[in-house]
Length: 95
Image 1 (cartoon, rainbow, N blue to C red):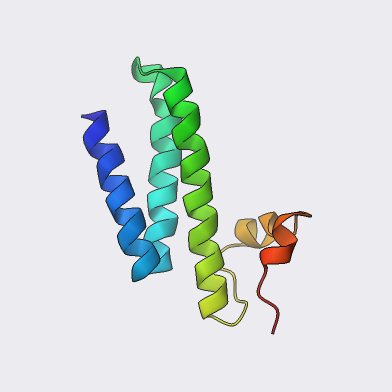
Image 2 (cartoon, rainbow, N blue to C red; image 1 turned 60 degrees about the vertical axis):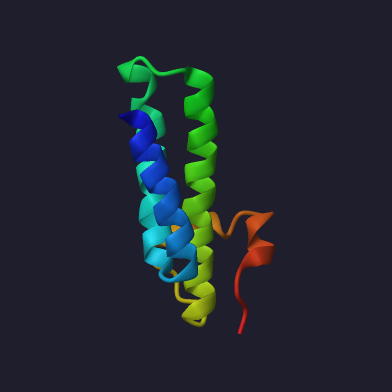
């Protein structure tokens, strides 16, 4: 069952990056929630940490694509704050 949810989130991620950044953001959120619940349901912790990192990266990428498409407008304050961090600051769209 867990593999089906993860596969669905990955498919949503690919489709989201191509068509709608919002889908990528939600796919990232689903991967994050899945990775946080997986150890509680008997899953492997190492696998959950990997999906947590992938989910966070997908969420960030979805927000970054949206900001580039919308002339620097961020979909959430959290994403805007995260992209103010030193390394991610360089990826911000500047117009």
